[in-house]
Image 1 (tube, rainbow, N blue to C red):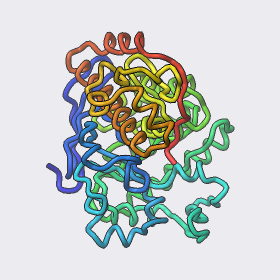
Image 2: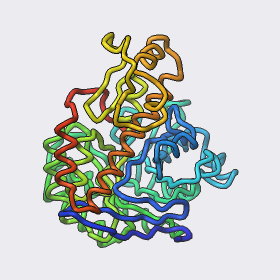
Image 3: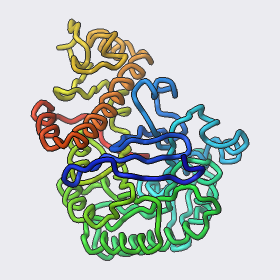
Image 4: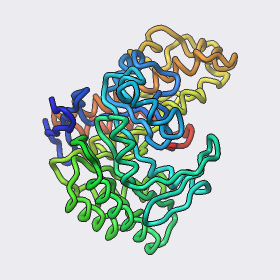
Length: 378
């Protein structure tokens, strides 16, 4: 097991789809993998024990938000993020680059870094690539991300190029600033423009990273352009490094991306939808507040073996949501995360058994195409 960095190896491929292993200091991650979002050092409505029940291997936390509260010195004083939150699995920390997009009204951007006004107490602070490395190394996650500029779509080629060049420059500064051998991932930007994405990838490879994130998706471009971007970008990415699609997404998007060669995902979709009463199931989305489930004694998903589906009915869950009971969010989050973890685990098994295309086709034939709540990583 690596002491600080990671080791990545491929166990099997089926076309472009990959089943791999990422060895980290805290967890051996089997890919494809889905990381629940724990922005503040906690996955909403979950405890570490419940995350294990769902099959979670690694979670995502956000260095920017943890800087705001409780403060990096608080986390560092107890020995790092793993001990602070009581989680012994893998942790990946995002740098705050997404907040350049999502909190654009509260920041000023320059080549040197980004000035933020805290939405918590109004204080102003300045994040540079060097500062971000200091913060993330103090948190002690297994994988840390460079600071990047995430640009919203639509944008012009000129705007996207400016953000892409800044992202590469910041990535190089991050690589030079790190003081440990903790695994550092570069982030590919360039919006929907093929020449910019490929140029960014080339620049990041010259610097050299332990893995590569695909950023700047799910920021307004829609599923068609996102998929088109993946189709030209993924073949240009190193075969021997993990590929992480940031902030995605729906079950359909996960399966499409796995088929194209993505290894890692994070998204708030399963947890956010759970808190809104929307469940993911093998037969489509189930909106449990609807009156049709008032007398429904069946589980959320008859094919699911999670704690919620083993013990509770749709009618009971509907009652909890209408009564505004906290337990409703807990039970449905357990189910939705279990559904996502099962989906990527079954995809992995299908890759190993050389039947991924059939697996994806059969899943999508059963799966509904309604809408729940929007995706975001903030």
